[in-house]
Length: 142
Image (cartoon, rainbow, N blue to C red):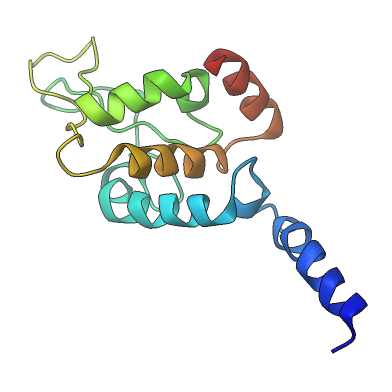
């Protein structure tokens, strides 16, 4: 293969991959995002939805007075939290302040996932947001 063509393919591949607006279009490596998606699908999607859409009626408490899992896509509020806050929520778990019970709304994953894996999930979540939401979240993370 012509060296020029080979160089073009290597340099253009990330741009072409990101053109679809998929996970590779975020400001992170496609490998980390891909890993984050796999971890999300294994640990998070059952509650937060396969596309990050959250539970139905996520804004209203269920019959036990618990808030259902919110979406992680652009329709939710995940993008309003800094990386540090998201990391803490995933690591330590989270109890919604309006819940009627004392149990964690979201379980802690510090025993199941490494810091690197949690970081990869956060990078994947960023691919579910609009450019404006990613900019806002980046500012919150500074």
